[in-house]
Length: 556
Length: 82
Image (cartoon, rainbow over all chains, first blue to last red; front, side, top):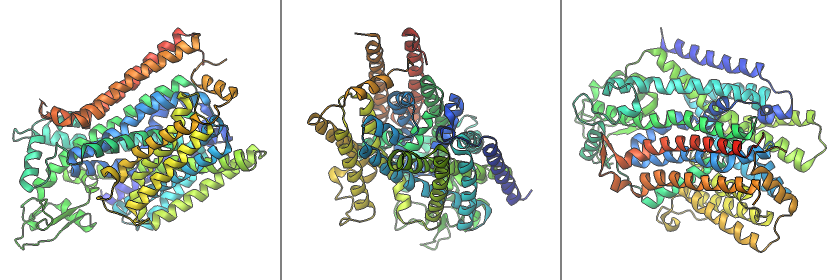
């Protein structure tokens, strides 16, 4: 059957499933809309968290980025999984015991201050908006690549689907669609990976396969290191970033993961404290399946790419090459007019430009898999983008309806009205996100990665100290959050968008890249909070009692 | 010291142990000691590279499940009811 038909079937079937789930599990109270009525079983919540967390970038781009960066790509692998240990050990159980609706709820109550709540809302909105625009763009890109519609149409289709199930279903609807989306996306990611591992190494498990020997009896990684040296690239299995930068980027991504409001809020949706711990474990297990496969895919496709193109006659390249050349993701310019493809590190001689995304997207074709596998990949990529967009959407809408309106502006609002406001703000947020998806401002791509820095610099210290330090007071926490997020915003806009006089990597403070700067801003947040809290009054007895209460799962 | 304080102290002890392992396998083996560990090979993997791209992630998963086990046991011991 024609590829296009397969893709329409796979995408259509998965979308119908999501909508059906949303209609069955629609929310009828604010409790169900914000936190699914606290009734989600841990395994389901683990899957939902995994889908919520793994975005279009994890699904499409990450393996490709690792493929081009080799060892240095490890920062993403460790950074985006290690954060779950922090979540499970330092945040999730206590926030679940606290048992309200949102992250600003915790900050506002624990620091007995609407100023703190307002700062938290501001941070949540900044982090979530930078992130969601990237997701809508991802939806558009997937549609345009697989279904040959233009990006605008793709974004609009994605917008209506998300709108429908997030607005109708709230957290309850989102949770169960995310469970379905996790299944679709993990199946779509693993299938080609397993086939390729079988083809190259005769081992069915990609995680083991990439440490084995290929058909020529040489270890794949040794072969890859050799190819890299030959072509002038940096050796695949050792790093070229400075150790300090590797360290700081990894820690910013870890702490940022633990501080992302749309991830934290998932742990509010389970029945009890022990379930919050369990769901963090399940979530990381489900995420690890993809994250440990990605580096294998990176190695397989890197070797495949080099062996397929390097010094081969341009006219004799396989069919998948020509197909993807048409999308502009891979381009060739015969600089020395010898008819061969030179793919080397030296920019003057290199004739091939490859977009990182192609390493995952073209995988099924490189492995010569049937058309329906490609269709499943398309559905998987959409599942990854839509599930993350929906989770973020919910954070934005609850920040507006619950934290801003109910808690700060008009506390006497009825539940019915609050629910309408929540739905309306979800509609508003998705339209804004779709607008940015269609007209991406230059900063979208840059800021998605930096959203972690922002979350690390703002939320993480305030929440952790809110739980682990009885002495931390509102003055300290507010000052810390404000200093942390402003400093991070300053550094990121200065070095990424050239504001405040701009600067190059020579001007980086202590050689720290903007991606790693979140760690620095976070430490400053901690220091400022602690210093200021020493000179200002300790929280009163009511708050001390609240802290003791969240530290213990016992109900009494 | 009352029950609640003992419970919290034990929790903090678990956190300290588990988080030091968390730090060692990722920042330690995967970054700071990666070059030294890369001298050792495990099958086709250089050990530092393996920790950075595989091993650390497996240990993370195990750490969380160990914590779940320890805390469930602790909750039982202190008869915490949820």
